[in-house]
Image 1: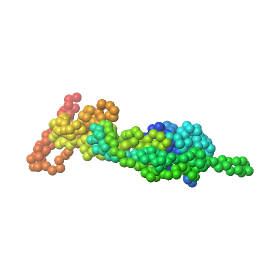
Image 2: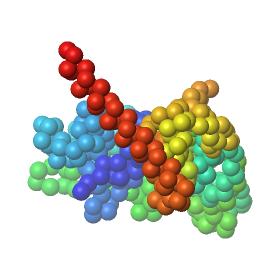
Image 3: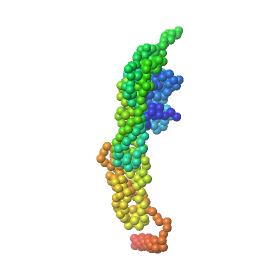
Image 4: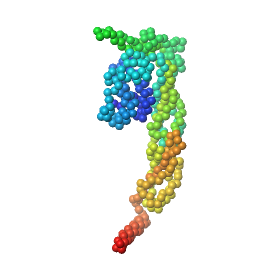
Length: 371
């Protein structure tokens, strides 16, 4: 089945700005005027369909719940914006790329282009997610080559304007037919769309203008993050092209589960096992909390499944000073092995309870007689 989020390369909770950015980057490489792969046109149509669906709140809600079939059943047009030809999306594409139409325009190969965003998956401890932590991470990204400063040419030389396309990155071929002349725009075969030619490539970057380099940075993880939380580190992605800005680094957090605490949003839950005597008489017990050991009161007559709430002892809300609650779920543990002394005590308790029930039943009958 087609996954629109996978086609665009975004998470299911992606914002509209993130969807637009993803579409912009993918459209540059898949547009049929610049990509001559046999399946480029079909992939570009799928990209347009995914973009159109996820940018519409009603369509997106239906798609998230029922998939593409659900869109059809709900009466939405699922043919996509390119069903009748590429012209239907010219307005969207032009707004992104400043006038590149389908089948006749061009992208300026020398225009500044933003670098790619990067993803880094980081596993942290449960307690670190609760209280926050500073972590040092190492990752690889593309940086401007220090030897050629991004030109791709060896020191002492400079790229020249491609003589074939005159710096446009594209060539135009006109075919004459009985029905008239038709123009076809293709990527320049000499400069491969860059608009420049390098006679002596830089040895450090092999003419690419960028090198892959390991970088080490420290990131602050705020208190209250949860599994799947995303931290954006600006300008730590791949370097841009032609002076364009660098992309961003997105750190995706994976929180290890706790063997003791169970988290639900800003609340944490723990289980407390007590004896029947503690349940009947009440008690003071020491439990483990996020803030350390703490003594709590177990009320007399508590039942299995009852809860004791410790207010403001849970997880901090992100960006706020408040915290959730710590909820203790009581479980009365019935003993499976008894000593002789314990058996005698339980028998006496049983007899007392039986006597109470018999007395209560008798009193009800007496009251019924005198009514």
